[in-house]
Every structure is written in structure tokens, then in C-alpha cells.
Length: 98
Image 1 (cartoon, rainbow, N blue to C red):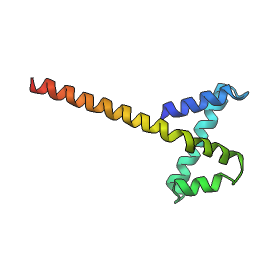
Image 2: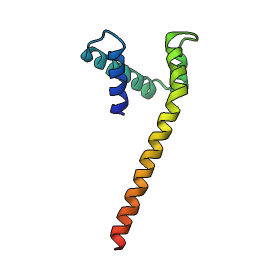
Image 3: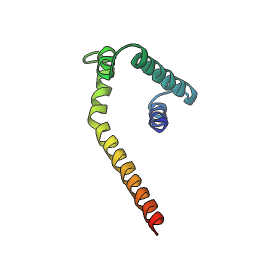
């Protein structure tokens, strides 16, 4: 997860005038607030998105991009890690048998 947020921070820095430490702090505080709302606010992902993404607003535009692009990234991520997991299991099994 840290890799995702590091990339988010780095892209934010390259697309703004933010100093790296300010961008990182902003992302960390946003993550903290989001986690707190999800854990303590009795709401799920859809409800939280509905509350923060004004229809036709800036956040909604970002969500549209995420909805289009992230499924492909996460699908590839899960396929890569599942493939590696299977490879390791096969390798360990072969070593154990031999």
C-alpha cells in the first residue's frame, strides 16, 4: 500500500508546486482521515465517496479516472502476485519431494 501512496505523492509533486515534504504530509493526513472515517464513521467506501465527491466537481473528475484505470492495474497486480505465489509453492513442493 505504501508504494501506491508514494507514487500518488510523487505524481502530485511533479504536477504542482508542492514541496516533497508538504505533499507527503498531505497524503498521509488524507489517508489518516479516510481510514478514520471508514473505521469510526460507520460508512463504507461508496458512502464516503458520495460524501466527498460533489457531482461534477474536482474530486468526481479524479474518481472517473480511477474507475477507468485502476481496475486494470489491480487486476495485473493480483495476477502477478498469484503467479509468483504458485511458482513458489511449486518450487517448494519440488524441493520437498526431491
